Every structure is written in C-alpha cells, then in structure tokens.
Length: 91
Image 1 (cartoon, helix red, strand yellow):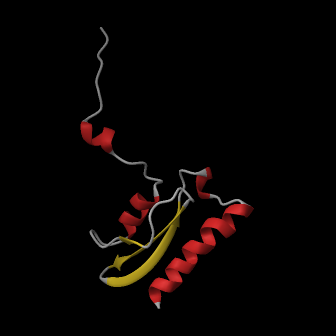
Image 2: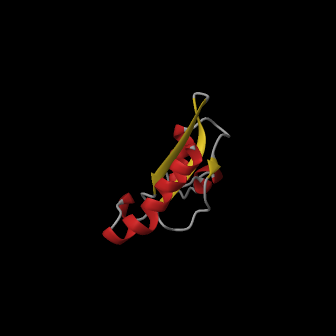
C-alpha cells in the first residue's frame, strides 16, 4: 500500500530562507522593517529597523541570486547604491 501525503499549507506558503526579507526579518525586531527602496531584482535590499529596540540601518544580499555573490558589474549597479541608501538614511 502506498500513502500519499501533502505538505501542510503553512509549509507550502513558507518563503525561501535565503530571501533577504526573511533573513532581515530574523535579525530585526518584529514589525520594525522599513524598506529604503523597492525590491528591484538587483540582489541587494536595504532597510531601517530595530534590533532589541535600537534603531539600525542594514542591507542584505539576495542569496537566491548566484548565492548572494556579486559580479564585478553588479558592484557598481546594485551594491554601491544600496550602501548609499544606508548612509543617507543614517544622516
């Protein structure tokens, strides 16, 4: 006899743990994430938030794209603007 089981709905809806929003959600206090820009597929994501109540600005590479690695071209087109968003948000 063969038994077939489906995954519970919560597992089916679970997001990839490599996703930057998921990773930042694990770092930052619940409900404190404020994106500094829209997700644009560049592989970088910068946000404001809180860690144990302390205001922080953080960025994260997208590990679902090339394992989070940035090529030489991406450094200027995605990493640098994300860093400037972080710096500007602190000022």
